[in-house]
Each structure stands twice: as structure tokens, then as C-alpha cells.
Image (cartoon, rainbow, N blue to C red; front, side, top):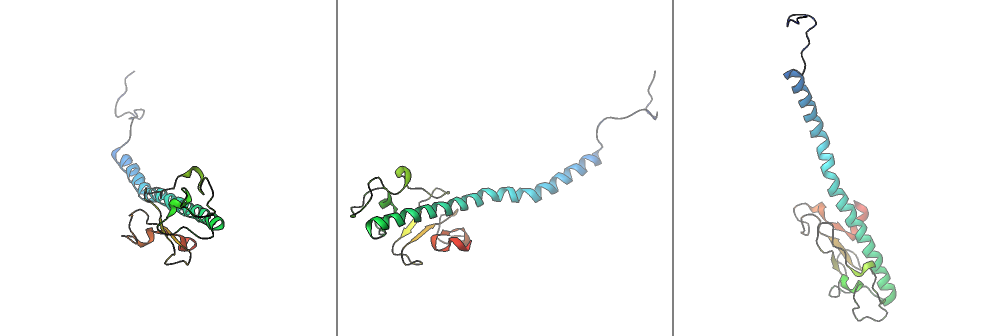
Length: 150
């Protein structure tokens, strides 16, 4: 039996160029809508992690003050939470589990000032992604005195 191209029973396999272009355009539109939402998630997760770590450091600082009667000075820094600064009442073993200071999610040290400029007791801050105070994006900083505002 012969099959002729002009026959009604002849079917071609595959897609036309127009069908392919429609699919590509639809995928492009979906990609432009979804990609920014997906790419923003890691940065949002880093900011959340920094806030949690600042709160944990605040708890450790409160325990330090309870035991010693004062917060560590700026010169003693957060190191006073893991190594004895020579202050009466310091708890042997430190105030941070694992005796290792956390670094912010961008790999920088947390900034500690005592007495603080924004809070009477102390200021604790991460400079965020750009690593600069204020930096290019002022909202990138995560600050102990401003945690609830975000």
C-alpha cells in the first residue's frame, strides 16, 4: 500500500516553528516572573540568619552581664564571651556553645560597641552583604537596636 503526501491519512511528526516559538515565549515569560523571586530567597535567608545570630549573641551578653555585673567593653569585644577577660564572675567554659564566635552569613565579624551609640548598653551589628556601615544599600545593615523594624 502506497502512502501519498497529499493523502488525508498522511501525518507529519514533530512541531511547527510557530508552535516551538509559542512555547519558548511562554517559558521566557514564566522565567522572568519566577527567577527574581527565587534569586531573592538566599539573600533573605542570610538576613534572617544574621538576625537570629544577633539575638543569640544578645542572650549570651545578658548572661555575661548577670555573672559579671557588666557587659564586655568594646576593647574586650565579643571575645569575652568565649575567653576569660579577667573579670570576676566570668563563667568557666564561656557563654557561647562550642566556644567559637559566629561570623555573619557574609563571612564578616559582628560589630560590637559598648557603650552603644544607639542603645545605652551596647550596639551589635552586621554590615550585611556589602561589608560597609551603611554602604551602598543602607538597608543591608542588620542592627541590634533595629531588629523589630524590619
